[in-house]
Amino acid sequence: MNEKGVLIVLSGPSGSGKDTVLDEIAKIIPIQRSISMTTREKRVNEANNIDYIFVDRDHFEKCIRDEDVLEYVEYSGNYYGTPKGPIDKWLEEGKTVVLKIEVRGAENIKKIYPNAVTVFIVPPSFETLENRLRRRNSEKEEDISKRLETARYEISCAHDFDYVIINDELDDAISDLNTIIKAERLKNNKMKFFKSEV
Image (tube, rainbow, N blue to C red; front, side):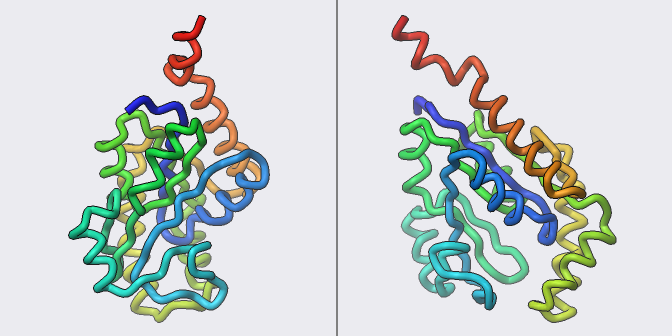
């Protein structure tokens, strides 16, 4: 596929601040955000088709069988996946497409899209991560423990990503992601379609 756009894969442990950084970067530069589909319960402050596409397990498994998801993982007992259709269309249109997905999903995307740029967001310490998860007050202790266990594994995978952003000061993390996106859009291989015309 002749990719004219840039595919950014944003990952990191739960509580690292991915959503906040992504919300803020969208105010600065034009990005096309893919909305993940999930079987987990909707939180009070979330909206369907905005934060996630919330579906039941039967529906998600049908999408898997029909190959209607680009990638998917089962995380803490719930499915998370990326709807397949829109991604190629947005890249062909030259857009900056951002996928916010789990670590295992990032590995799958890189296999399918070798030019994808992977970015890992991590808090300054594991203690900070735990504090952020507990401040949510949206999960049982058992669920928090599972998320922390999963976070240890995910953080151990950070070295496999193209970039790592330490989300200590929010403004710095936003600036770092903005710089990465700008640099990737300026890469020479993204100019092939232009050079062919001169």
